[in-house]
Length: 328
Image 1 (cartoon, rainbow, N blue to C red):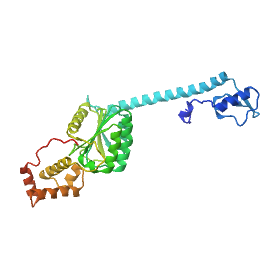
Image 2 (image 1 turned 60 degrees about the horizontal axis):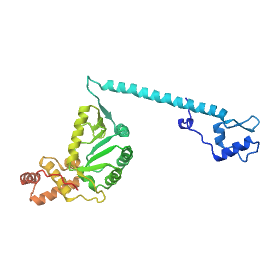
Image 3 (image 1 turned 90 degrees about the horizontal axis):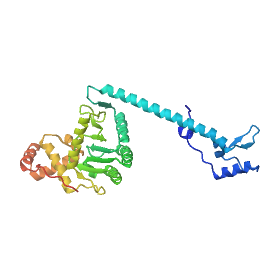
Image 4 (image 1 turned 180 degrees about the horizontal axis):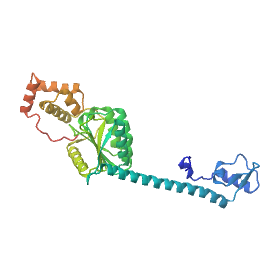
């Protein structure tokens, strides 16, 4: 196989107007002006003789040699494509065999943040119909958003329906809002919830990615292709999606009062259940300082002097009773 760029091997050469005039001059015995246009040499319509002069070649003769070279290059590429397809098919069989257990389908462990990112990007890149994403934890780093934007816009450009659930707290995170604005303009749908289940990505309802609950979140993920498990995870996503509030206007950066109340109830519910401020902050995607601010608000409202008393007063007040989700 040639080491040259495959795109140049099969690219057709177009004759330029200057080349046509130069070719006509040669045929009629006139001395052409200037150097021979490259297109004539590439097409084989002009050849340089040993004495340095140029000779016009009959087009049918030139075509035979030129098209034969192109056909050989195309045939080589066809063989290369067939070899790649065969290799991928063989690798797929080995992949399935290594995880197959009876009728079970694979659940694969992916180690390392870089490998996880590359694996997810490959899955999103091959997504053809639907991409579902749940992203808890508040705003994401700018570099993560930039990388996600490239993949997501490409998927939307292919006609993939994309739905994403964030937590309410991203409504005040400007980098995430800027990302959401571009995704929404491209046709993506984004909603927010007071608290979502763990991080989840589902591509075409064929493969799902979730963190390994027994390992460091960013270092180990599970790639799940068992149809039943994928259906279960899609069901969890749909339940969260129905309860979430559409993120229609991302220009403000302030949470509507109803969503602030939702976040506050979630924070206080965790407090009543015995979680620390640090644990609550991780769950709802905000800083510990913001959680402490909500705690001070609750202490002032309910007139409590200790955390235990505050939990008791909130629990008996009915403040944590369920409220229907509010659309904004």
